[in-house]
Length: 129
Image 1: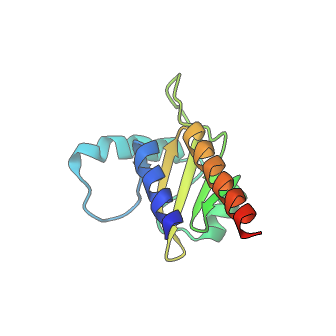
Image 2: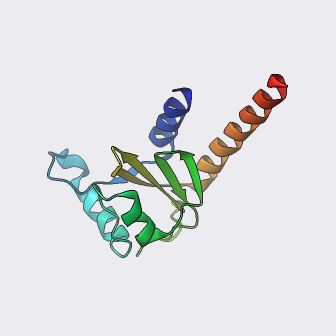
């Protein structure tokens, strides 16, 4: 449960951009950024509702898993990304075995989170012995 809360916090703090492919109502203030991000992700064809197998077909195996339902891809280059864009990682979040969210973010934040989790796991392993 703590891991899920940490992953959720990371997603909220690390990434201002997201993509959704759904008929659900979307706040009009973010529609233009959603359309732009959809354009950036177009070559990968990752969309809400896809299964993990479909994501694997499009992007291959994830470089890291923040949780079983959160996959990270490093060196993710979005099509036509603005020069100086620091978003070099893609997080794919699954819910009920389908893509619920795709977020672009700075990989430094994600790698720091993974390092923190590994350090905690190592500390807990030493204490358990």
